[in-house]
Amino acid sequence: MPDALAPRFQPEYGPTFSLVIPAFNEAEGLEEFHQRLVVAMQPLGSWEAIYIDDGSDDATRELVEYLRLDDPRIALISLSRNFGKEIATTAGLDHARGEVVIVIDADLQDPPEVIPDLVAAWRLGFDMVCARRRAREGETALKKLTAHVFYRLMRHTGRVKLPPDTGDFRLMTRRVVEAVCKLREQHRFMKGLFAWVGFPTTTVLYDRAPRHRGRGKWNYWKLWNLALEGMPLKIATYLGLMVALLSVGFGAQVIVKTLLFGNPVAGYPSLMTVMLFLGGVQLMTLGVIGEYLGRIFNETKRRPLYLVERFLPSRVRVVAGE
Image 1 (spheres, rainbow, N blue to C red):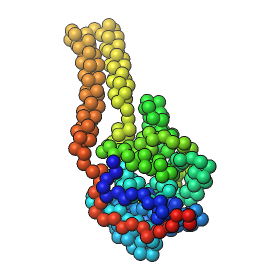
Image 2: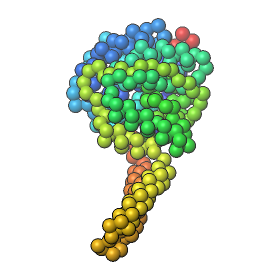
Image 3: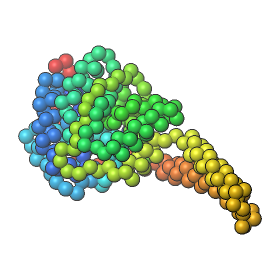
């Protein structure tokens, strides 16, 4: 169930669109982001922008409060500490009041100018419209390669098929948001949750821009840990098989070398091959089992996903039928 702090959706007062914008140390580019957001949303109807300050240690929260003085469409959720982007996004979804909810990052890598294309696709009758990256400007070749491999691996090993080259930038109808908000697991992989709930879905292609200001928050270690949240258990089987095949190859090399050049230590080749084979498989499998046991333990605690230090709602009031 949603957390007690999450407001209930009130269709008679809610705007048409709610934009969920998680932000962590985004003060440098936040003002320009909001300016471009206002221009993009102007012709689309009533809307609100929900900024989630995920425990920033710069002026992100103060800047949102300043912008809110002049723009009643801005809401601020200030979390009690840094909970991570997945949890911050969930907090925004819990508080969104719109008929349609759009998730977008504040770093301008996902251009607000793409939002009208998402809205146009929604008006064709789709419940979810994903923004699919056609190009990824400003990213290294290694990051592009690992992202490509990850999405293809997930599509071929998981029960739920993730849309390729698709992040959190997307549009969802109210029934999709309510379905996602019912999923309250502690270890969250939002791309997987969005795909799991289903509903009619389409994609819109766009060119992802390089980060406009500030530094990226996702290094390779954080991306690896995020990927682990979405990887199915059968990955352990495949990795174990890979280690086993490598051990067989090593064993064949040792045997050939022994036949050609002799073996000064009797039994060494066969012993090392067996040890590497079994040890690699066992350690890999035990590690995955340990990860799952830790996650089960965290789920049994039943802690809330996040704590809100301060919530300033938007001042948008729309009477039903307007």
